[in-house]
Amino acid sequence: MAEKLFPGFPARAEVTPIPNLFFTVVMPKIDGVAELKIILYVFWLLSRRRGYPQFVTYNELLSDTVLMSGIGGGTKSKDEVLRLALEQAVEHGTMLCLRLDRDGKHEDAYFINSEAAKEAISKIQQGKLPQLVLAPKKGEVAEAVTPDVFSLYEQNIGMLTPMIAEELQDAEKLYPADWIESAFKEAVALNKRSWKYIARILERWAVEGKDDGKPRRDFKKEDDREKYIRGKYGHMVKR
Image 1 (cartoon, rainbow, N blue to C red):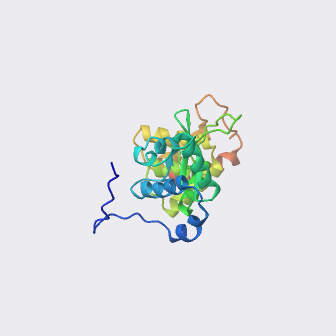
Image 2: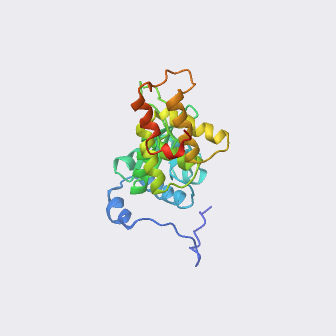
Image 3: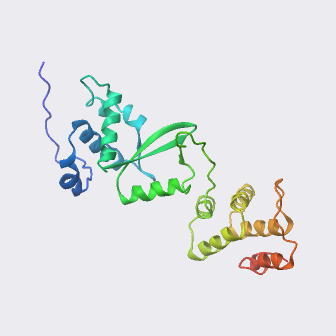
């Protein structure tokens, strides 16, 4: 039975945005049909996706029946064809790959190579997107990543202002990262979602010591104590 011909695109068909450089620079370098199909399909998938950052995973592509129905054949399995095509796309610079740790399972995430993707990958590598954790390299043990103070503020309080950002930068210089994270957690638990309240927690710990079983910092000298009380946060602290 002859395969039914495609009837043509309707007048108001939805379209998928693809950069012009793909057709003039990238496509001429693509030799494999599988690589071309996968790149175009990823463009389509990401154009329909919301949220940040935007990427697709290897397992997501492998389980996509529409994509995989047009891939395979010959002596190689569909899994091998998909893996090879993705590797070629990365080698050609069309896509970027990052290995993530998702609940203890390692998974390859693929991004279309763009400025937005590079920025997102950089944030993941710096621990600025705590919901996405890098998988350790072979032979390495994963280390816990402490979110930076800006991420903590945006996730727990709201949008940053220039004045608050300056105060957060100063706090990073004054207090250990784990103190700042703990102070945010305590404030959220008490439903006191304000930087003013968090700053008071940090100031109290600086003067009295933090009750977490760790050695407290040395604030015996009066000039050390005054550094916290007379500093930028002095107006926030009751003396």
